[in-house]
Image 1 (cartoon, rainbow, N blue to C red):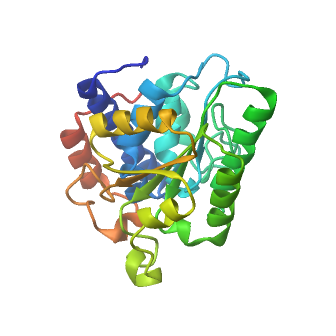
Image 2: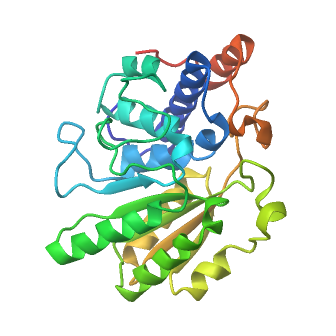
Amino acid sequence: MAEVANPAELQKIADQLRLDVVKMVHDAKDGHPGPALSIADIVATLYFKELNIDPQNPYWEDRDRFILSKGHACTVLYAALARRGYFPAAEFAGLRSLGSILQGHPCMKKTPGVDATSGSLGNGLSIGVGMAIAAKYRQKPYYTYVMLGDGEIQEGIVWEAAMCAKKYRLDNLIAFVDNNGWQSGDSVENVSGLLPILPKWEAFGWHCQSIDGHDFAQIIEAVANAKQAAAPAVIVAKTVKGKGLAFMENDNSWHKRVPDDSQLAVARKVLGGGADE
């Protein structure tokens, strides 16, 4: 799949990514489909419209960087990388297998196109701050994007990174918060009382926006606004965990769960069948 700009085409790509996720987890008998599906529309928009990348040159110095800080949602990142041309979709069959390039959390030393090893929650924004500082120091034009979970931002290191980003005026750093309202054990609000999210980022001096994370026009506009800001930018995206499949939506049991054959069949029907290769 090549780069596109039309929201209708982005929707088709997002559906393909969602189907890839469900099939990968089904075949591997392990994985986190719910938190992967909630960010599929944002990931599709970034990889097929926004990111300045070259799949034939994964380590191009001037490429935009993307860090999936909520690394347990890696299947949607793997789907996007494969469909964008970094490696064949046939690699999906090796998900979570010993020796595979597709491990249970992203590993930059194993997977072409992965810019940061992640999965230990809270660390992605700090890594992104380092990349953004490096770009400033080396006078490089690239942007660094970081995808955070709303449960993940309970980690203190996230806010240390937020302070650092503001101090160094990192207007080349754009963070998304996947605000689906759930984390592994319960709702985010029941676990920590984190809400409201946006005023906390505002207090740290970031350029802040709140959007519907399933509306492609809003995602595109928010990225454009972030690039015009004179400060690090955060986009709090309201999403639905398990988005795209009625039997998964807003059901936190799908945080880590394997679809059976009948559920995979439903996914194929709802999401358009998709391509296996």
